[in-house]
Structure formats: structure tokens, C-alpha cells
Image 1 (cartoon, rainbow, N blue to C red):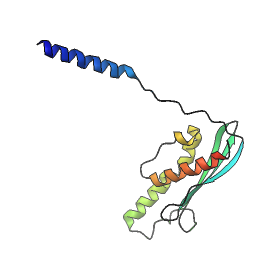
Image 2 (image 1 turned 120 degrees about the vertical axis):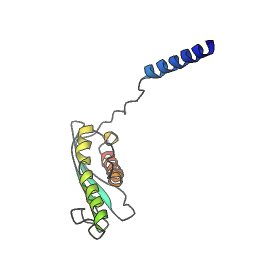
Image 3 (image 1 turned 90 degrees about the vertical axis):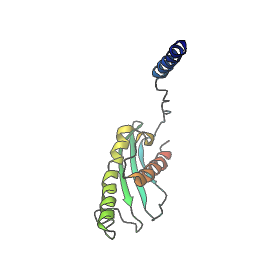
Image 4 (image 1 turned 30 degrees about the vertical axis):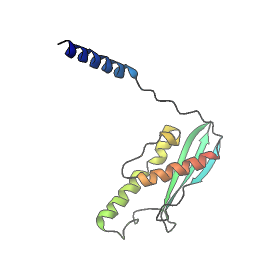
Length: 141
């Protein structure tokens, strides 16, 4: 009986310690940006596509961002992108393009690339978007 009581006490203390530990997230370091409009590009992916961004900074805040999602032929991905694929792959490609369109607004809302979360279904574009943003913002520091 005593062993069971000791185990229960030990277990309860462990739960209390875990519950009281809290989140220990560190805040992202503050970065100062100079006013202006900055252009950045990602590296090309395995199909030759890339992402280009133009980010406008005002009063040390990202005020606006535009994105171009470019295919391997140098054209912006639109409703014709992926049509040469079967119907299922075409739908997936179109869904990814449409989901990725929200990345610029999310950047403005969050204020930095690290605050933008990946959207399931648009992961490849996410990686290129973040890379392009970081390249653009390097010029704003």
C-alpha cells in the first residue's frame, strides 16, 4: 500500500511540475527595417520555378507585399498551370496556387517571415516565398 501511495505522490508531483512549467518560447529578436520597396527572389526549384516578391516597408513595418509564383517557362502560374497533367494533378496544382496567394497578406499581418505559417498543400511555394522574403528584407536592414 505504501509503494502505491509513493508512486501516486511522485506521479502527481510530476504532473504539477509539467503543468506549471509553462511555455518558454523566446521572442524573435527585433529587427529594424529601412523604409523603401525591396525585391527578392528564391532559388529555382527542381522544375525551374521560383518566387519573386516586392516588399514595401514604412515606419519599420512591412506595409505591403506582392508575390509572383513563376513556372519553369518564366510565366506566372495561373489557371492554365498544370493542365498538361491528368485531372487530379491539375486540381492539386491549382489548389496549391490558390492557397499560396495568401502568403503575402500573412507576411504583412505577422510583420516578419518567421511569423508566417506553412499552409498544407502549398509547402513548396512556402519555402520559396520565405527565401524570397528574406532575400528582399536583407536589403532593408
